[in-house]
Length: 120
View 1 (spheres, rainbow, N blue to C red):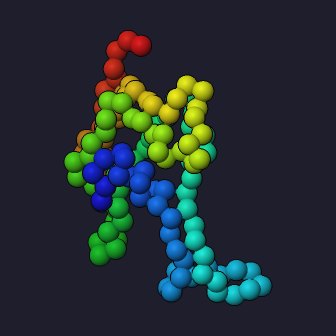
View 2 (spheres, rainbow, N blue to C red; view 1 turned 180 degrees about the horizontal axis):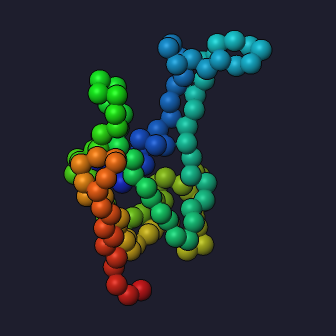
């Protein structure tokens, strides 16, 4: 459901309130409203992102491939996603070096192709 890397990271780091049907059950305290969130504290020198491009089709009882168009920038600036703006010694900007693509209709078959930027 996301159109690019930035939108995916926005969704990943969006705080979520746990109440109603998804209320948090604290041991010894019972149901408690809570808030959960994902924070990135430190990023590695080389960043490898793997996208979830499969969904489970509950009507068919099988996984199916997501073939929606997805954009990824040649330069990825992650400063706004790092908690407290903690800078990495090499910065929080990454240059795209390679993309791995699956070609095929389903999870049970197909081929993988990798596109690698030469040099550097």
